[in-house]
Length: 289
Ligand SMILES: NC(=O)c1ccc[n+]([C@@H]2O[C@H](COP(=O)([O-])OP(=O)(O)OC[C@H]3O[C@@H](n4cnc5c(N)ncnc54)[C@H](O)[C@@H]3O)[C@@H](O)[C@H]2O)c1
Image (cartoon, rainbow, N blue to C red; front, side):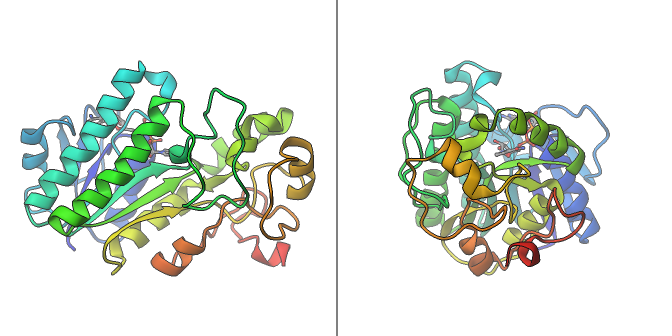
């Protein structure tokens, strides 16, 4: 793998991923609807991930694809716009890559792919910690688009033999941004209860992306991600008692232990998070063990 195509290269994760890939020695082709800042990609292209011509041009000399382009929230468009943009872009990128014999793709899914966190109905997760198999209940176009993207990944594997990792990102932000999200969540913890107060430092997001691109794993896999701890500076059990008292908890969650099961990320990708909002530059495993 020498050259990686990054779609959504001008987005918040995209910029960090392009920087990380360049720092790791890869050549990077970027594809984005526009660039608000200069890109560090050595081939920054303007184009639409839904356009076969734009994606075919962007795939020139590319060995692997990182597909991040999407409308990242249901409030940022009509349901039709969000669903059409996200699903068409993912299918097109995987189809063009697959038909050109590119054998490795990583796509951005979301913790919302199971639909419960953004559900307009008062539903709760079937259990904690959340894993990749937790029952889906979807009522918004964004969550549905991510669920369909995961199916598109499976199809790309079955049809073209593309190895695809769909990363289920939780809230992924810089450390400084996370402090602001944490302050809001602490004011009203109910707002993030259904996603288990999950987050991931942007630096770990990039580490996970590179681990997935470099993984020898074959097939199509959905992989849940999160920091080792929760965003809120309170004991996980205390929050669960207050904000999710009816949800079964399948294993002990001492201290601020996260409510996302990341064993697949560890076993398949060799990825464990390094960063905690609560412990500057350290993992929390020492704290919670
Ligand atoms: N940041 C998070 O907390 C988070 C959490 C879960 C999932 N995700 C997913 O990760 C990915 C990146 O998220 P982000 O936070 O960087 O979003 P972002 O909005 O900052 O970046 C998305 C980029 O994709 C581009 N884009 C959208 N549609 C496009 C199209 N059709 N063709 C080309 N470019 C297009 C946009 O111009 C933008 O630059 C998205 O797929 C998002 O759904 C993000």
